[in-house]
Amino acid sequence: MPHQPKKEMPTSVKGMHDVLPEDFTYLERVIKEAKRVSEFYGCSQIATPHLEKTELFVRPLGDTSDVVEKQMYNLRTRGGDRLSLRPEATVSVMRAYHENGMQSLPQPVKLFSAGAFFRHENPQAGRFREFHQANIEIIGDDDAISDALVIRIFVSTLQSLGLKDIIININTLGDKQDRVVYRKELVAYYRKHIDMLCKDCKRRIKENPLRLLDCKVPGCGALKDGAPPMVDYLGEFSKKHFAEVLEYLDEISIPYFLDSHLVRGLDYYGRTIFEVFPSDADGENPPALGGGGRYDDLSEMMWGKRVPAVGSAMGVERVVDLMKKKGLKPRSDTKPKIFLIQLGPAAKKKSLILLEELRKIGVPIAQSLSKDSLRSQLNIVHKLGIPVAVILGQKEALDGTVGVRNMETGVQETLPFEKFIGTIKARLKEFS
Image (cartoon, rainbow, N blue to C red; front, top):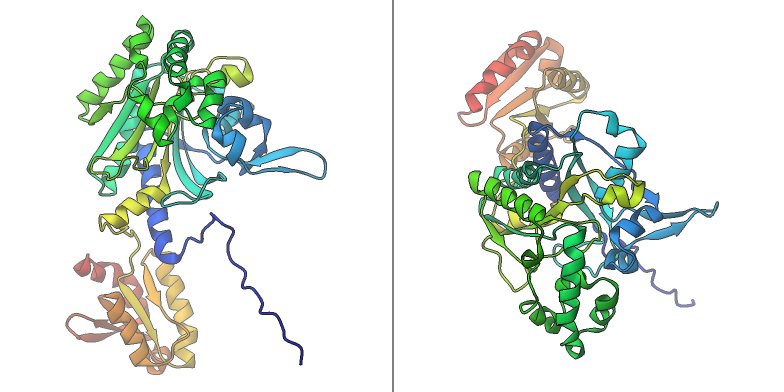
């Protein structure tokens, strides 16, 4: 009999990952908390498509940015349209703002969004090719308090998840006129050290010198410390705006570190930029939990009209990793306090009615309807640590009653079906 080649097991695409049930509770918890905090501060939720026209991203992110040059997932449809999986949220949200006439709404428009994004990066700890973000955008406001508010929402979300030790690395890129002067000084500095630059940075010095400050290659990173700081080239307007942002952060006691060489990797940023780190982060280049800043020129760049705006993006997987590292569990708002045990065919049928009645009154309940053994179901109750077992056997199903057992004391009582439904919420307060 000829040798049959061993079939290769299908696996997930490199850099993509399954979110398993034990991790999904974390991911859901982070996004839910980000939404809750942002809504308190006046944000409304928005969702944009995963696919956008490629040209939407190319210009605002920068033709020479790593995202556009190396990381976007591009495709061409049968009709010839060039589309891309969204690599970030801000440009899509600004497109939705213009396309759906949000300029006519009271300004600023505050928006929250969350979902999956895609970049063809080198997979490593905390970095995937499909990843999740929670995003805040405040569009239509020039005031420094909006910068501080975006940072406040970000930090408050982390704190409510139990991550207290957070620091903000912050800088300003000034306005367009400030950056023209600064670029000349930056290029002059790096040209003195051109032989020490990596291949990409030798190209960046001509095309986008600000990105020289963002290079992670060790040799280029060492040069950054001697580069001229942006704050020395700010005009009066930019100085005033940045000073006000810092005053607001001081007022609300958010710790920050002035990083005069901090830049962001996308062309649309200007004035305030920031990144968020755990204050006890290890390593030379720890991954940021997220970041953001002002993008006042994005709208003019793409739609011909200046609309001031500021926003942030939180890396959900990175926050989840930090929560796990610190032993923080994702609190569940619907942890069941009741387990339904059913015994016999009649009870199994009746249990479907009972479950639906409990769902209607908002009582979270666990069950294992496919099990038939009392012992196996009680074992599950003990493993889950559920304080109350509701027992529905053949006799109870025929009598229209329900057995209720306190798993801590072992005391069990029998209640009429109608009375059980009416009183179970009050009974559960003993275990709140």
